[in-house]
Image (tube, rainbow over all chains, first blue to last red; front, side, top):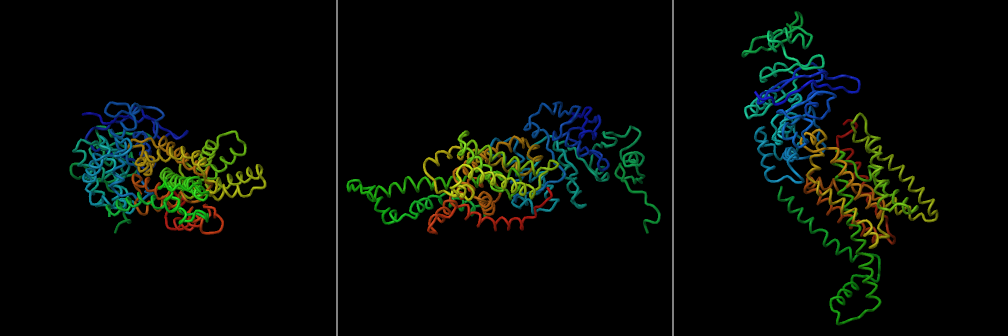
Length: 260
Length: 338
């Protein structure tokens, strides 16, 4: 299996505050990899470091064997697309104008016909072509998220780095988004997503990394990621699990007196 | 809808022609009445009835040495301020900024007056440097935790603008205590001293700045989306912003150095353009230049004909712009956060 991305001893700190310590991980090509962890464990910081938006204090990041440091910004844009947690629109751009800006890494001064076609295709891939002429800032949070993913797709990257792509979406839209993302991995796209909801992650993800003690880890061969024994170590809390589709669903331990 | 906009843009392309022609006929001079101007052109076209009377010569000099340079200057200044304003709004992701709001205009006016008083630095260079200095102070004063709120940028711009206006007044009083008029020239903006000299001194930086902003017109769309978004799609946001900021400062400080502070003009026109043509800078930049130039020319025509004396042009733009600005402040849901 080709490694879409590989992290070697990646460290990062804000001033004296260490956020990431010796992170070692690899993400497979054409797979949906999910990073799970508690709030404030450093997941978003890690994703920003991988995307080159923060410079690691130490360690190496490779994409398809190439060192991130040796890639120019436009080479990076063609290798991976990053989508942060929130995006606030200031100007009333149309949806297609927003998606077209994803082509910046390919364009000198003005985008051409080819760029327009690729933007169009990205909208189709996200199934939001009907929103094309709408005002981006007037869309719902879920629709905006789909537009921003279409924008990242217009970069024609090989990897998507998504920071909590399903937050702010209602349950059915979360599932719709996950199905869409999953289908993208069948088109030779690797996805690395930071996610909050472990169940959602287990339903759709292929590989799982957990953020704990400022680094990424995976359960040993004797434990499954969805086992209550393993998740206890991540969340420092007891869970119940229910077998589901060869994996398991996680539920809280329902204390007596809370229900009924 | 799309074709409507295209048609409208076509109209805007031709708008300057009749306005410039009408402006040539407009002015307080009795000698250059429309009747006499028609006579003048008649003589001009038919040299065989050669009648080089002094009146004809006067009209020629009014048209070509007084009115034409003033028309071109007003047009270029209006275009430069509008294009710069639009560029600055994209860079700061803030629809309420302009060269005036950021303190750039006051900084450039001080720089120009300072250079004229001391005679060490060339006027354009000094205007550019102090204009840039003013923006950088406004920016860094508003910057907090690598974040800049829309309102705090406006507030710091107000303070910086106040400081440079005070310094400007000081320089003017020290260098020429009896000429209050020259202070008015700088702080309220006018084209009273316009001429070919003035045009030639400012045309190059204005054209260069406008040209760069036009070249970057699509990249402004990318920058306007946000730093992370620009960077992860392949554009270096800091490098890009420095280029755009320098170009906007170049064009608008040159405009200020010849016309003084024309308040809020660089804010109103980009807004009008966005309302009519949408936020895409690809069409927007050209529209800003043409509408910005044409409107300032019309305002200048009004300022030199409506009263017995010339109303400083900045007075008119301020009186139109201020209610507009307040309206935008109320309407937009942008505030202290972000």
